[in-house]
Length: 100
Image 1 (cartoon, helix red, strand yellow):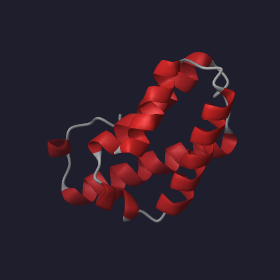
Image 2 (cartoon, one colour):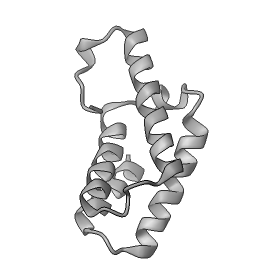
Image 3 (cartoon, one colour):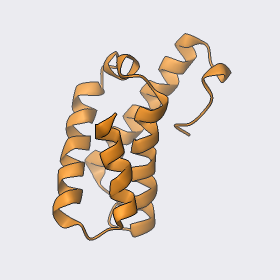
Image 4 (cartoon, helix red, strand yellow):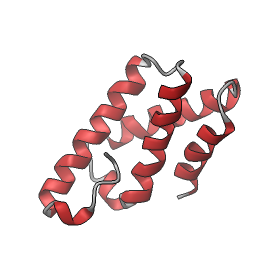
């Protein structure tokens, strides 16, 4: 979902879609449900990686939810690095997010 083509939306629609996506990510991180499942964890890491790959920083920082969400993503990343019980391929997506 994070990789939907830019040309499908007007600027306002794209920003609304991004806001909805970020709210969903924030909700998942707050609840933490099913993130202990390896497949769910991996796909969630892929979603986070695609988020920054497909949206510019300016688009993300314009969102009201940005501060809270980036804080939750940082906590999730640190916890993932500490546990390291999951696939290194999943961590690749998280590290790619921070690299960009």
